[in-house]
Image 1 (spheres, rainbow, N blue to C red):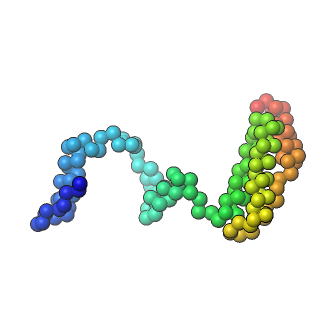
Image 2 (image 1 turned 30 degrees about the vertical axis):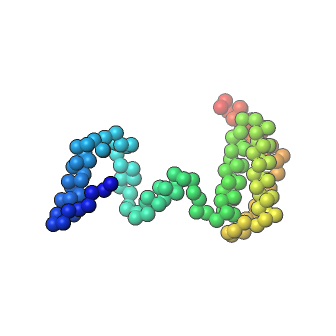
Length: 139
């Protein structure tokens, strides 16, 4: 339980005492990041840094659902073009297309979606062309 500040003792000296005693008990040993530089040094101070960090760690998006799906579709297309096989390309395209079709059937909140399902054959063709370009250049 946290000890109460005794009457007549300034907050500063009471807090200093608490820190010193915790240090003596070893409460600050082996903390994550000990001995490492502080992150974002030199960046302007942002009073909401801890909120943004928590959202980032938790993978929380603040984008409206339509914009989140647009971003997911963009990422899926890039992933498909890097896929190791045609089967994987087709799977990625089928999965994102199902999400796009569902969003068209049941509109999401946010700005207009402005997406249509990808043409699987076109994506496969682009994937093949990209692979041929890498194979020809030796990498």
